[in-house]
Structures are given as C-alpha cells and as structure tokens.
Amino acid sequence: MGNFKESLKQITVHLALVLGIFLLIIVLFLKVYLPYYTNYGQTVTVPNLEGFEYQELQSYLKARNLSFEVTLDSGFNAELKPLSVLNQNPKPASKVKSGRKIYVTLNSKNAPLLKMPNLVNSPLKNAQEILGNIGLIRGEIIYVPDIGTNVVLEQKYRGRNIPEGFEIPKGSQIDLVVGDGFGNQTLDAPNLIGMDDIDAEFLIIGSGLRMGRINYTQTDTVPSGIIIRQIPPPGASVKTGEPIDLWISESDNRRNDF
Image (tube, rainbow, N blue to C red; front, side, top):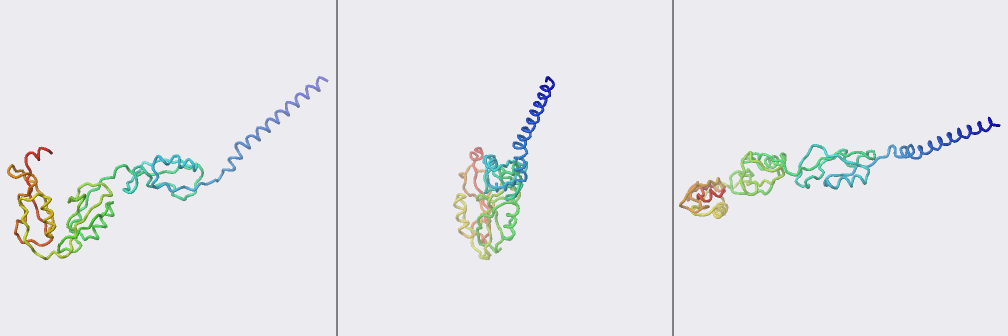
C-alpha cells in the first residue's frame, strides 16, 4: 500500500512537470516565436525627408518605425533652412525593414566662402556658366554702351565691383555689367570736379559712361567725399561705355574714424 502511494506521488509530480513544460512552451510560442514570425520580412517605405528640420526627424520617423543618424558630411543649399535635410540614404520610396536607420546629411548653418572668378572680358554666356558651375547666382544684367556685344565689363556684388579672388558666400547673387555693342560713339567727358560720388556716378552713367576705379586722397583743404580729380579729364574725347576713374577727398578725421 505504501509503495502504491509513493508511485502515485511520483507520477503526479512527473505529470505536473510535463504540464509545466508544456505551458512554458505555449507561452514562448505565443510571446516570442509567433510575433517574430509574423513580423519577419515586414517592410517600410522610406519617406522623403528632404527639407525636414532636424528637430522634426525623430518624432516623424519614430511614428513610422524608423530611426535616423546624422552623417559627418555637410552641404549647403541657400534655398533650404539651416540644419534641414539635404540628402538621405536609403533614398525616398525605398523598401526597408522596420526599425531601419536612415542616414541624413544636414544643410550647413553658414554658406562656405568661394573665391570670385574673373568674368571681365568674357562672353555673357560663358560668364553665366562659370557662375552656375561654382555655386553662384547670376543676378541683374546691366547693359551699357560699349563696342563689345554681350561682353562682361564689370562684376558686382551688392552693388560694388569685386575683383578676382574676393571671397563671397556660396549662393550669392552676382550682377553683370555687359556691353550693348553700340560703343563707337564719342563724347566729351563731363566735369565731375567738385561733385560728391553719388552725383558723379549718376552723371557718369547718364552720359553713357561707366564708373572706373575710385581712389581716396587725404586732404585738409576739401571736404570729405568731394571729387578732386578724374581721368579722363573734363572735356576729353571719350567713347560711350568708357570708364571714368575718380579721386575723392578724404580728411584726417574721416581716416581716424576707421
């Protein structure tokens, strides 16, 4: 009788162990294997992130079961906000697994500086191609009387002539002064002595001529900002489109202000 009870007890323990193992297998199947099998091979379509700002990325991608990482590379696009997405990998519309990391390149905060090329005496078409190739924008085309048809005579940034090698931000707008092909007419150079530079420039351009080099000369006898010399001199025979170089007075006080 005692042996029977002992055997029954052992059988009960064995059945309990088997049942426990069975239940454990069922739990593992439902909680681990089945979800993995169900999601295996599931893909997500990569969205187009171009133009997204950095602070928008995490929440936007998390909602789509994706993540991101910023690459060490950077670029610059004047039309996009700083720290917005320029490029991404994988590309938009790609199919990737859920949870995939998207690598993004951000727009730089500051435009890189470029050295201004020499466009003077170049055909307008060539000048436009050069500007586009290096990341500058062709601005206003200003036609002036000159025998060179569509030949660049001056290159301007923010209204000022800029020389070759001058550093300007990428994406800057460059205005071009171009000959209209009618520069064979002659006239007398206007008398600019005693004028200020603004009135002189107005008269020069209105006469069909161009502003040449501006030089400052220190003097104590003439107020600052007054033209004291010009080349060609007043009354000299000049061709339309020809530049007029100016010497402008600069007092000691003006110099000390700088």
